[in-house]
Image 1: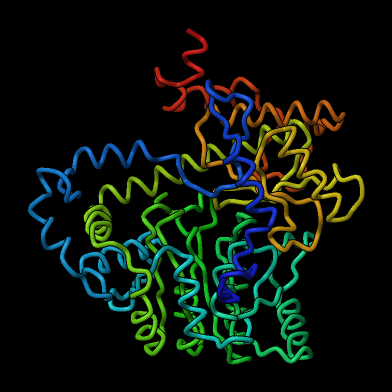
Image 2: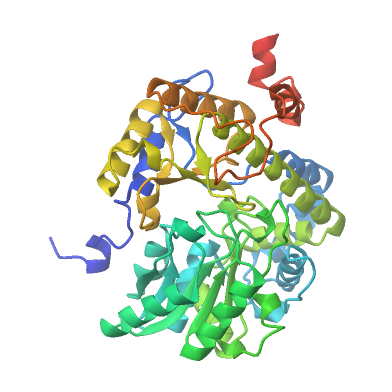
Length: 477
């Protein structure tokens, strides 16, 4: 048999990571409320499923958005025929407008700089191809999304150099940590071509303030390296302060805009990962031109472009959707973190994203990553929850776990929380905080004097629970 390529046979995809192993455990034995009630609940997938009823209602009211309906079939031929890699003009205009809207309309985006790709995965790889040659590297603050090892490294040959951040300052990125990572790379004869930041952060659920972003921009200007801002969670900020984008900060500071690039998608903010809508927005004309040519390998289908353009152009719907999504994320996050705090589980204070950064360090038998993996296997095999260990996010402190809370219905969430509670009780680890003091890193400064009944009222009155189809309602009738 003839040999095949090193890329094909190598481990560059990173599929052997515990991050993906958890997915495999879920796929082997997925939870179902009636068919498989003892199955694994998926809490390792950062999906936003809380507003699909809202989207489905709009689709029913606007059948012309689909070319596969009687109302939209007149657009079928022109949509089905060849589209060049620039994308449908209405699509680029609608995406540019939406990007501005989710950033509070404090900045405008040029539709001519919108370059589409097959999701954020394709967008990141495209940027890596444009900015760096094989063997060169990007700085990436830890903890960071495990998929970056695949997206930026696998086919490009580019390396990632971690910028170590720790819990002492809530994993904030500092100039000292950036300088340290940069100098270590120089000592190792690694050429740094850029800095990649995820803002809001996956897995932390936090975002950078304006002063931090200004310092970062000054840093990349001083080093003459590129800055890539992954802002795919921009509209998931559900509590004040408001999200601050790189695009806003460069309006206030002197910088070389040729070094600034933004990666965006509709996977998280709209909850459309299956549509594979990724965006590269570069302030560099050469990068924009090169990325557009490269986009031929991962275009968004014209049918999807047509639907997205129609939806995003409806200002009233988008305004209401963004507000409703933030409200539902806020309530889910509040309920989830409050319930965990009652059994002594803390998490990093956060106000964005579709997950929490859960602190289980006190459950480790010893402060090692081996002990973290032992605990993770118990959670997967016995508690039957797929949560992601911090080591898979390159966290340098054992005992942290990312837990997704927006990818399931209320009933599944209640089952997951009850399993966590039972696990803590079984291991004699339930430590209810004093009434006047919550865990240091609980997500909200909620008073424990708030009654349980008030918390349950918010939960029970949610639309999905009040629905006759809700398993909880059916269980009560």
